[in-house]
Image 1: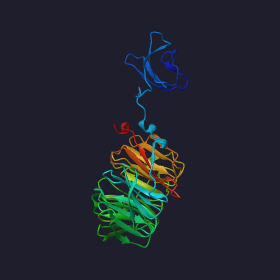
Image 2: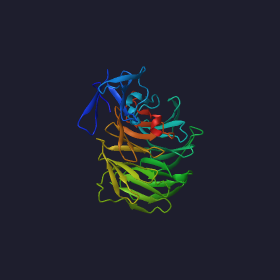
Image 3: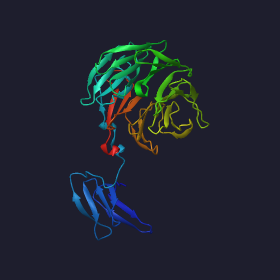
Length: 381
């Protein structure tokens, strides 16, 4: 409850109301155990009711009110004014950003054909990984933080050492641009999706274990179920496919409430719900049985990327409408909409839940193509 008039009205079940006056805006209120109300004003004063019903006594006054009298949504304090742009690492747009599991680095993949490792302590680039000949479309770290896999428009998938940055090897070279990459749970397989709809499973030695054929158009996303037994892939072919990792058998996600659209991104929550984003500006929440249980709106452009926090509490979605929407995965309520950003291509939460990183399209080194948003500690309490 707040007021820009310096007055606050208290309405009880009776028709009458009480009005308390303050010298500045009312910014927060709270009820006391005895049923009376206390409130804080913008000028730093905290008021308690006096014996007169229409007046208040100043209880304390500081430079500013440092603590709220009532709980507020901590995500509301996250704004573009408080984020940190990462610069000097790329001269073109960023297609993918990830955190290394130990939180030491942010890694970005760019249309300038390079991969950059950024220190999360200094927000400065510390390594540039060079090897791809065309745009790097996707990157994914191993769970132990020792390896990074990348895919590119040059039709190659590379494996990079993060313990000896700069070392890499080509895992596979194919006939179509690679659009997304991922490690399977347990790192038994490295997976890549391609522009022609094909998906390849390989080992770290580059041996191709299995080729998955089911999509007929560009594969945009790969996501593994929490138990690691199945993989979900989304494509421009208007479908989601669930694959058995061990057998390669697959089935299509079907739902009478699902309106086919390009699937741009997908991710699982820890409890096994799948969330997908598409080009109709919506996100869909799917049950384990493959049915749509919730449609999430709010974006005014296609949903390009989504990320779930490690604790599973929050979902971030980025869009071509130049916004990032943060939601609770418990209620799917919108907690904040981050604006004043570029066309969002990628989002990721830090392992400790203290940061959100986002990547953006860009045409020159003058554009901010990566931003780190600080998440209030109260969010994770």
